[in-house]
Length: 482
Image 1 (cartoon, rainbow, N blue to C red):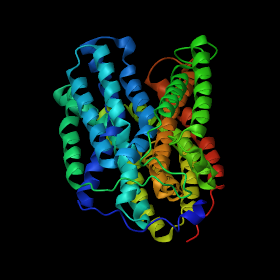
Image 2: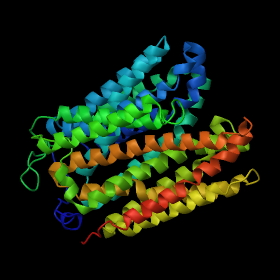
Image 3: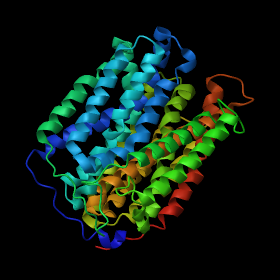
Image 4: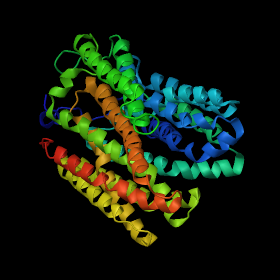
């Protein structure tokens, strides 16, 4: 069933069953906030952690293992929640995240902290995927874009606010408290959702009778193959050209593993009774556009969000807290545009013009950022940050809503988890690729903040052609007919 036709058939009323929608929404958004925040909040505390625990050579794994675990498990959680229900799976995931946070705070060695962060990441894999699915079921379709706009705002706030919060907490109470503060927030998220969230389990039958995953077995074999392919691909991007040469045996072996596991995953999904990602979904023209577009957007988000704070610190001599505050033009514009556009799109049902505008504005933002010089005043940079925030605000969650609108109710979990997971994969790849580009730009330059500040605009330039490719891809999106 096509996106254009299916948008007229999805129910316009949320699922019933008691509870409190506002309280459930609050609990879900808190969980979402925690999952994104812990991707970035640790970065600012890494020197203090290394000074306390030692193991400087392995310190990068504190971030990497969390990202690998959360990215690799995102798709699985959608299908598990189809089988067992959104609320119990979300509660178990938050509980795992809380336990992982406590163990991270208690860690007495670098291996203990890395193991705890991995466990924390296994829980975090659900904390963006499941709220995105559940909110689309709590609210009618005409409000989806507006509600998902709030989730985009949470992502922007947590992504940029992570280093700011991490620096403030570390300075005030020590690095262990960046993990301990998750405990009361996680318990609050659990309490609110346990009390307020009431949804029936999704039905097992899809629109064509082939079925969702409602009462079938979870495709664990497919989940293992997909997780293996995801981890292998992320390690190629993380290590290639930096830790190991692109032609090294390690990188080539990982690349081969990625291709092999991906092929086995497709083979498995064609034969599984209840596939993790039903391949028939790709018959829909909207999903064939939205999923690669979402991955490309994730790469642009990751590359910009990680290196813009570094630019502010090196070009303007700002501390971590100042740099976080200096990104407010980006965050405020992102949240405002995401919310306002969500309301307008919900009323009109016309996604494509907004998505095309967003990708074009993002391309302009990257072009402007690539022109930064040591003499550029902050006021000019603030305007450029606002331009980029406006572009991303039009894109991020609206792509997810288009994917949701193209799915039958029984496939909502699979489609949403796929969209959120490929964005997370794209984000991780974007961070790695932009990092490789930065390493290349710094070759032959004298070490120091001035060289880094001069190199980052040249790296950000590559976001412009990528955003142009995104625009071209979105022109293929079929228009919705009301």
